[in-house]
Image (tube, rainbow, N blue to C red; front, side, top):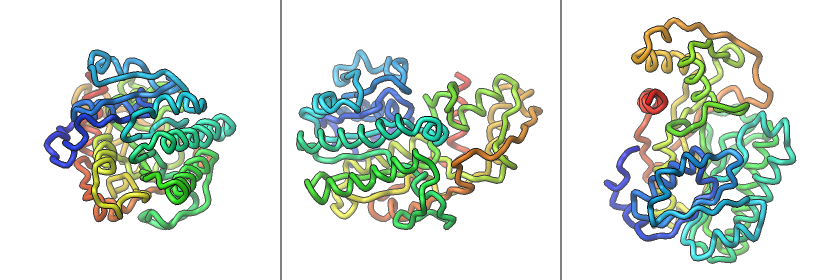
Length: 333
């Protein structure tokens, strides 16, 4: 992880009490780690449905860290977690387009009802700012590239619908109750602590696991689908910028959280094979196979990050090659 303490703006987070929902997950635990390093008091709320206790182990001895095991579908739990909190980073959600297609009801309960519970609890406890994980899936069937925040299409999955509803609710809570919110549309985030196991594993950790096991990865489609793969440190930077910005115009906005570059799945495999073969030469010889396109997938994803640069002074530090290099080293070790 890069040293975020070098940024003078982030020093304002020292002694601030910050709730991270879904803090035992991939993104949430990385946010907890960065905030603790900055001297923040961190509360993690997680029900361990998709997060892991081992992601938090290094924090348990830190007096500034508190774990609340609970579910955002319970309003009382949300109210308890928000007591005395300055800021909320809301990462708790059921991700994955295929999961939402297989079980739309649970995705809606967590991603919509749970989100609304957290907004109500933040409002009732006078939280200063509510930053939440939105999604690039909100762009739906829009074919325009790059993706610009105020131009979206129709959602292509139940998951995408839930994340768009989050944006609508956040906007209403600002207009109705004065709760400052910021939505971050994450674009294919990857990096340390991302779980390679399970039915709904993301593509990069899944490919890494398969290649390390000398198994040929299966690419959905012909491999020309492209994504704006975004390393975790860029995501942390965006969250920290949203927490600390003094630019009022930057609040109550939606931002693409990405690099602003796209990589095809074929190129991704080549990057991964190149990085992993430094540790195991046989990986370079592994062949990939192709399967059918996945239901609900958008063909191409590329973000414009001009709005985040202008209003938040966002400057991504990791492109795809640098991010993969660091991610692979974490998986190897």
